[in-house]
Length: 488
Ligand code: FAD
Image (cartoon, rainbow, N blue to C red; front, top):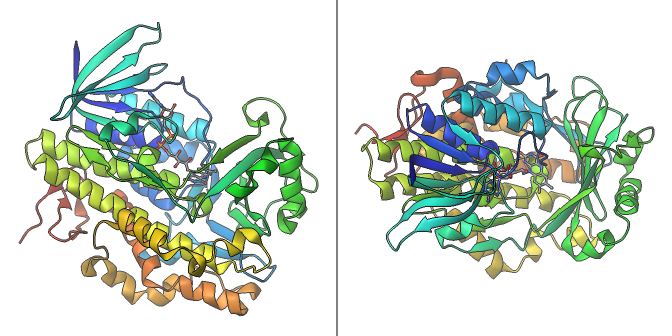
């Protein structure tokens, strides 16, 4: 039987990140991907920490720049009671201002392939058209995987660690023996497609994602090139029946009822051929697993958890988890840190990041008050079944977050953080003021904290000094690729 240090299941952003950062420490890593790249995936709007932090650690910054993806300065939101959209800009936090205060809107077929080919260049043994069928384990730990090779032959690989980065539709995650818990709050369904010739926001915001609330939910409008736009409607799962019939009619119906998107698409045509010609749906996509690891195995990205796409957090969470998992596995393989301590650090940080986004997004949904709408009434935080909410937040929380040392520099700029929201006309309303207030709250500082750390590390490399994020926790080593005990 074949042997490896680590087998990574799945070649999306999470799998490519973890495998590259393991191979950079000289480990033998096999990545098994069931598709042949390029393959389609949704999740096109990125955050700066992925582009400038993770991108630099992986060594793909220049390649991403050369790919000429649409530059995203922030998000524009038609959210709250006033019809005028307002902007959230990335340039607000001190470390983010200047040359790294932007992200990209990406065609995932191109972005994911850049990351996967880069993994191979860094020494990862990438095998496409190779689907993992089961995980090999015993009572003590996970010991490898079984997969089907491109010729249809069943093969086994023994490994010290298995990383499941196989996304939200695979069942490999079940081998950590946890349970997948779905959020009652974000019980949504998305219907999406692509259009040619849609309008753009005025410069310099023309690359922004536009999110627009309407009675039945909200829509995203993501400019992928000068002419191509990704358009999706997020609606309540209770309305799933509407999507059973003609999906084109359903999508165009949502567009017709969402004034700003209707106007932006007034001269556009829906793409009807090729990969972008298909209309697609996704449902029940907000969940977290009750455990992210067991001896010999960790979950990364959508395999572990996902929250509603309104703030474009999916790729950030999967690449961040890839970084955390690589640090933990590199530490254990080097004999520096015991496995349970290294994995606790992984899961503690990962849950913390998920929880702060979860809280922030719940509050953000709450800002769009529309008492006449079933969708928005059902998503008032105050209307939540308190027991369900508490149970879910406790589960995703797991740890105390918000270390003083890390939030200090943000406290100094708390006013500036609220100014991430441009005070356009719509901010002078009551709901605008509430929104502005939300961006000045501790939860937003927490949302920013770890994303900033990743970005600072990408820019400063070994110079970056970090305090522990968790109580009695570990800190990143100088190269950012493993953990070390903090200096007393
Ligand atoms: P994936 O990208 O899903 O990669 C998993 C890979 O594993 C796939 O290539 C798959 O083929 C492979 N695989 C599966 N099973 C097996 C197997 N058995 N063996 C081998 N390989 C296997 N995120 C954002 O950042 N921005 C957005 O704007 C955004 N919008 C979204 C909109 C919607 C409606 C939804 C549902 C999600 C959105 N997301 C967004 C989230 C984003 O799609 C995911 O979070 C992200 O793709 C997760 O990356 P990953 O690497 O964990 O998994």
